[in-house]
Image 1 (cartoon, rainbow, N blue to C red):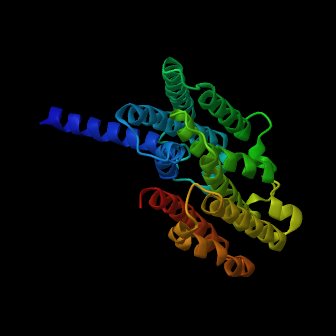
Image 2 (image 1 turned 90 degrees about the vertical axis):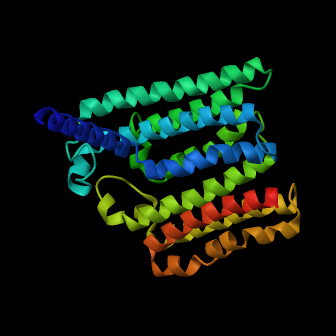
Image 3 (image 1 turned 180 degrees about the vertical axis):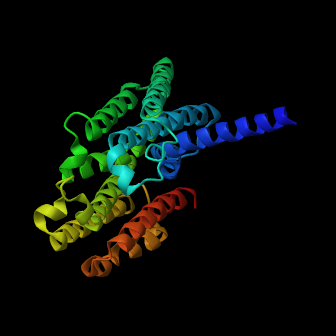
Length: 304
């Protein structure tokens, strides 16, 4: 009986440890990435994936998930002292994961991510396809990731950090297309939608967190004021709408199919009111919803 109880206790402890490491990767933030890699491939091909391409995309989903997990874990290691006050329930400040264990976990994640990218590049080369875009996108994203928390610490530099994050988010679309050697103008426009709307969202989040960021970061709202920063965010949203509109105007889609983007367009256009009122939390949530609806609109356009 005692032995059975000891085994159950051990299993519960191991399960708790696993959950803590998964939490360190921030899985909620990784869901969109897991979806975006295959979407990038589909947008590039403008067709369905064959079994070989599906396998290649699955490997690169692993590359992106472990890449993002490593970045999120690095961020938590860097912010351990701040999180002890601001987010005490997170794995490191709650002492469910030690900093040393987190550092080793980051190394494992980087090895898995880099190994997956190298595997994909070799596979492309063996099929006489262009392998270097996949490697180049990965290397650029890794450089931005590492300098976000380390080196120049672009995270603390406000707008530069916002741009870095948004470029990394948009790069996932390009990375998905590069996985099947199918970079195209359509992929570039979709990436543009993601970049501009995410950059707007990052600025709105800085407006929301301006008081908490005092002394830690120099953000755009601190430099130009809340009202002007929100105006910049809305201009960026409009730039995202232009990128969304172009594939229906110039091709490859028919202009009439733009109706499938109506939900995303209406949400984004209607954000001027909440921005004017300073409803930053609501605006940030709506931008995320609009991004998902926009991607869904592109999918429906391709297959209806």
